[in-house]
Image (cartoon, rainbow, N blue to C red):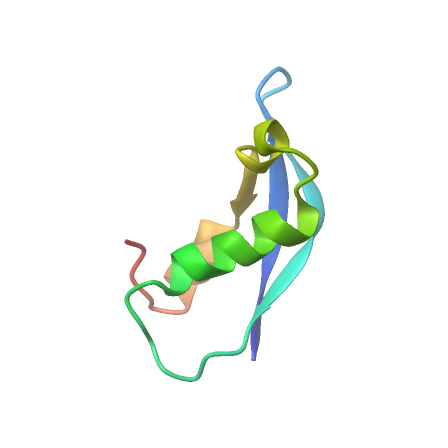
Length: 70
């Protein structure tokens, strides 16, 4: 099981604020892995629709694992 960091992007300060992490439990690579993890992160850490847009995953961890980002 791999965990990915979840961040909130602060566009005013141009920084990322760490919120927590999301664990990927799928064993096979599927076309929508990244979108599924992002949806789980936004559901867990988002408070409102405006706040949900600012939540992102750490893409560098996804690139290191050799997975494609769609």
